[in-house]
Length: 443
Image (tube, rainbow, N blue to C red; front, top):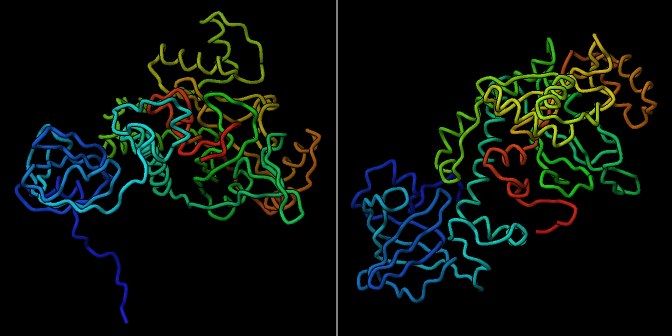
């Protein structure tokens, strides 16, 4: 009988191990995928793609025990050789090859040259061959940065006493309501895909006080724009015992500050590769909804057409206004009209036509919606009745408030939109691993 005792040390080494140790002149074994081959005659550069980046290997005719003609791009190989310093190589070193062992070979040629600095494809071709396109190091870097955003969200909220939860994505009723629902049959009963974990995270405030989740949400919106998806990843948190709704904005600001420092420290290579300048999050201006509309109308000579919501052009102008006026990359827009917010949004006690809610705009694009929620049972019932809604399907949600809930609030952040603005892309599909929109269900 044999026992599994945990992860064992492998014979192969990684880029970070070589960088952190004294490997000059040492014999090493390394594996990776052949990213590209540059044949210079008696010498060839075999560039390996590894999880940490690119590794330059040097093939020397008569020294390396292998026929270079047998080596194909996209093969996975294991090599042995000697580490030598080389400032022109990626990461400042190369491996002079003694042997090459092929682990696997491609059955067909790649659909496009993934080794180019920028992929020579359209976005649609990129998405059609997504898993191949992401082998390009710049394409891959976007999702490393996205990983850093999620990591920052988790780490910061853990440090602030939040508990991570996982809520169901199939439900009988949606928290948001409306017609933008994906409906399905669930064992002969009607069901929907959840537009938000809102009901569940509010319910869990009564259990853990502070909760968060990173998970997909589904919107059956028939928008085919550069900023809309029908499935996206939402970074949600809900916190109890708040004194005012600005506490939620402060928590998000703290998350952004923590995350920008994390990206600067641990993702510098990817930021440099994509030419990213991290935004200023030292302080974020906050402006009332009605005041923001008035300011951009006056400065940019734009007529206010919709007094109850922000049009995309208005969001862009608000972002432009605060960039020009105070150098801000982000701006909180607060006190949205009650008629445009869900029934559970807390109305402003000084003027109930507005709510204690906000959106966060990043370079003129909404990336966050949040605010204080109604925590009083009777107040919830009154607002549901005032809106002509029914409580059918919400009995268990409402029961939580019947048995007492603290003042609370929270938010949802669109991960793909935040990443898109961070890395300077114009289409949210560029920063979505496998997009789902009006026309795309594959790959």
